[in-house]
Image (tube, rainbow, N blue to C red; front, side, top):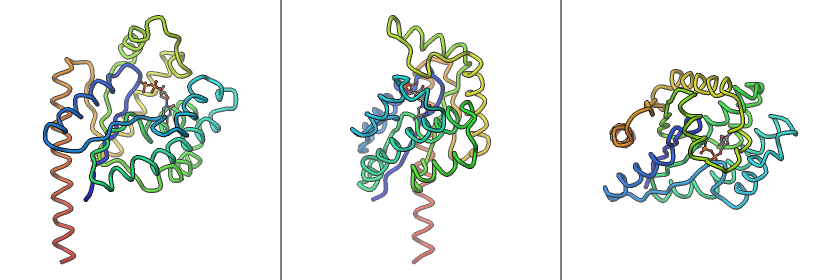
Length: 223
Ligand code: TYD
């Protein structure tokens, strides 16, 4: 049995959790086993790293240390949760994954690309997403939404940053999508929820159909 690994990416306030919930309903209604998870987090070890990073406690240690903490959390999550779920045939929906590190630590954290590639390789050990949905939104709209959602709660380490950084992150996500157009699909997130959900469901159904066709061809060739 072979699962399917879908990651969701985008800036703050892009609506990732709402769309993940909608997609999981769509996939479950069609009879699939679905696992919903998020990064940083998903295992006790990764949740501990999440607390250290998002509280801001690691900020003074510098971006390289933060990037390695994210990677440690990711590796635990991959090996304990994501890979076993895929091996048992689940569709895994993950809120943020490697592209968050590429964008937040690599681009806006100004880390050396070679270091970032090395950390990524160690973190995921070959487990690339089959499909990545990038929810794209003007940075101002995302910030307004995130602020409204947060209400009186205090902002986390990354939410406190400036509009300029959010603009850079949006551009970095779009650059990844351009470089990896088969894996990454950009979805405009500044639209009604139902419209976005239908577009994502169609993209996922098409990607899964293409994947099955490819697996079928691979089996035919080896026969
Ligand atoms: P979270 O509260 O989960 O935010 P969101 O709802 O926006 O996903 O906080 C995760 C924060 O951590 C978010 O600001 C992005 C950041 N992050 C990184 O900087 N690098 C990473 O590799 C990951 C997974 C998240």
